[in-house]
Length: 368
Image 1 (cartoon, rainbow, N blue to C red):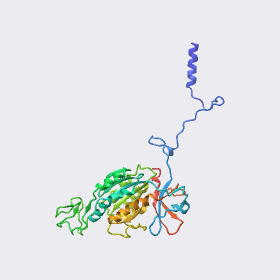
Image 2: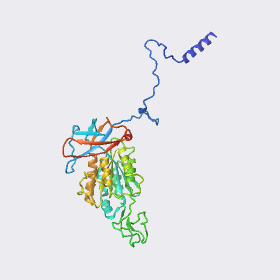
Image 3: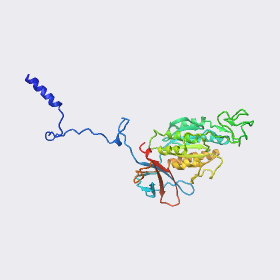
Image 4: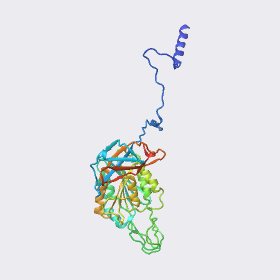
């Protein structure tokens, strides 16, 4: 009976909690109390610890007055200002970056434009190397993914070779009751109809009402970069005449915001017959056309060409420029935390140079 009571007593002692003030034998420490990780370091999804960084990456292109790339600048020649406050540049490199690119092609162009692009398409693949990855998307009223991201350049070449760029005739009759009707993808629509049969009604002036949703196509392309690696330069390689419908679900501002949040730069090749700059010359000035505005706001660039030889040359120029940007990084200091968007200004100390970079960043886009 004594042994039974002794055993019960030992069990009771072992099951009692250690009091906070209880003394332990010399050299023995109490086990650490359970602690809760800081909220900023917790992964609410339960998939491990997620470290949120506030570092902002800024790709920068620098050109001389002739539009040539300048590649010999050093870290101390750059200045970065956010909300008017100068920031300390923490990292700097001029090493080429691998590309993640969405090749976004307008699928409703004037017939002659479409023919020139059609003949030049396969040369797009020559601008990408073994460390790059590219997706292929066409768009008119809606975007269509022809190929998702892939590093297989042979597959990209094959997809481009098989791709048929959509077109309409360059001229139209003066009203919806005209006899010939427009030509869409080589097919003439019936006469005496107020529409083309493909959702492109004619204006009385003889111009087509466009349903090409440029804003929506760019917004969709930006979403494709959600899971791409952060060490890649993210670009949209846009080929278009700049036509844009009034029926987009996303506005220009919404789309530009999404592009900046995803760190995506737009490089536009305009095939419009209206060419405000010499063929192949990069546009430095901030224009009003949306192709130019998207490129300017995201730190990309705009080029102009309409003929096959010029297009083929520009395709390699675009990827070379995007790959060979300077990369600056800083952690925001002294910025206005009451605003989500913060304008960025990058300056170089060397005179006579033009700087192309993103126009700002969003706090809500950091740590994504």
